[in-house]
Length: 254
Ligand code: ASP
Image (tube, rainbow, N blue to C red; front, side, top):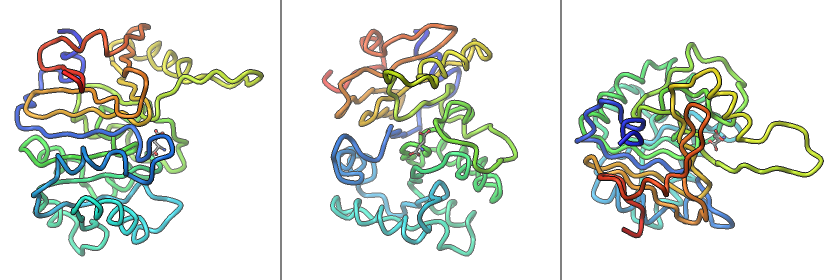
């Protein structure tokens, strides 16, 4: 059960409905194309889907929500972007689903702090509002953003994130070792995190994969990923596949 404790801690997750995608694309798929069936499954019938575009840096928020709506439209879904509302708190209060896209995780968290939205999002999600995130949007579902792959291009007031799960996330996981390249591999970076934070687990999600939590039922969905997810804790790297038989923890095929 240590794995479940690592992800949930003593949180009451019975009302929570989370879909945490490692990436918006998988292999050569179109934008959100591979994940669309999962997103549809989670968000079908939701009246008020609120999109948070704050991780977008190299495109405007308008362009970002248009891109997302174009992708979601293929699945009969559409969202309202929070930046188009004149009252961000009211927009979120009315949401029955919150969607946070990828980009730069520091920019995203900085804006969430600037608009004082973290507590409200936590409360909404604990009470059953769906949460869909990809990449940076998955990072902020963890305890802190200390295991993002991004550069700190802005300085948020804190690295503390939403803490919807009792662990860190590392999206786009790939432990590539390039011949002749002497920078750190992903595992080396995660080993450094574990060295200084031995009791904090990190869940690494390979590109194309997702984590789905619904009513205490946790699933790792490998999707296009040919790898399991990995849990890094106290110097150990453990494949999630070794734990899929645990209660509440099934792989996609079970
Ligand atoms: N930059 C990534 C994203 O697409 C986040 C990450 O790699 O940590 O949102």
